[in-house]
Image 1 (cartoon, rainbow, N blue to C red):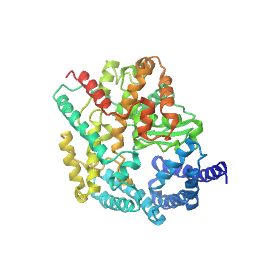
Image 2: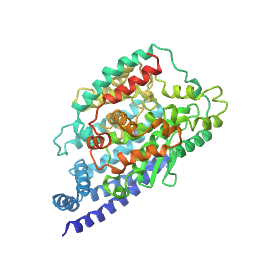
Image 3: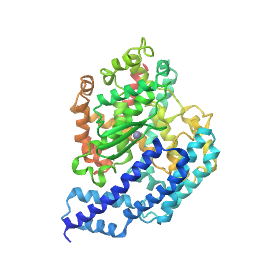
Image 4: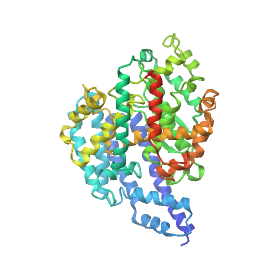
Length: 498
Ligand code: ZN
């Protein structure tokens, strides 16, 4: 068979996988948004079955042999070669796992997520603990089927962020600890910025109007995406022209929906701007978690917390909330959007303290997998670390160990990419500012220029390149976390007059 014919066969099989993907994505989206909870059990069993069917397609030995054959062909072009090699690499995570174990794990993680939700609502870690222990045990068992050069937690880290290891993360987080902890202490001695007006009553329907105004400003294509509601905001990019984002409206919190919508729109924009050539291939959505997070953080923190971002939006916001924002200037608003204070909830944390929330989770995960943390004492371990790094101790499990969904689904190794993504974004912004006057674009209602820059330097490639290659392509240099540290130090020194 010619290489072209082989490729055709490969594409036909990929089409079948993508059809399963579509159906599963829709059911998952439905599950997270509107599905009634009493139907959980019925759905879980059938979704686990569907997951298993998709698993069979992905790990079909004939299909894997086909890919391996393709990867050996010398006349395969470079783009296709990369697509195949990423897919083979990712397959390593599942290809040797027995299907029954995979289905069992899939069902356990669904049940565990539902148990987590109940435990969180009841504020009782004990309701979730048995599921978490089972998930940890099974995650460790799944690792024994991996044929990686790496070991233990390193395998999981590199699943989410190719190229990253404990050694590299240790270095990254020790820089954060060394540079940011003293800065946070210094700020805690200064006078607080007034954010009280952001906690007034902001009716949900008006917040919704504001979100659509912000999305319009960001040139978010509502014919290729939608905004829905969930307990926890997320993005589901089903295809290039079907990007679904969600948010949660808190009527006593103006900032929460604004920054979660901008964040998720950042994720959605990444997939929306993948080139047509790659949009129906494997690299449409195989970007590393850190790369993806860099694009959401870039919009949320590096753009939407700037004064110039609000030049076109603040007046509209004030029209929507004349009483709530009476006497508040754009400057007051932007200062409040950047205020920092040690707090318990990661998703509500400000830009400066955020990486410490991640550091805590990283240290706990590392300890779970190397055995240095007692898994039967996780709630205390969690609380102790918050006291150590942020100086506050959770009084309720819902504000402590139960706040995040990730562990319930077995996503170990994912958290560190959140902090890494912020680090990448600092370097991308630096590179962008060499080509564009960012403030001028924002102020002149030309967000599109920023989107174009991101498409040309990053988005159009999808996940074709490794994070380190992609960073070099976009910025001309290797990843350097010092940009991130300098950005935070500079910004907060000015803001708090240090
Ligand atoms: Zn995100």
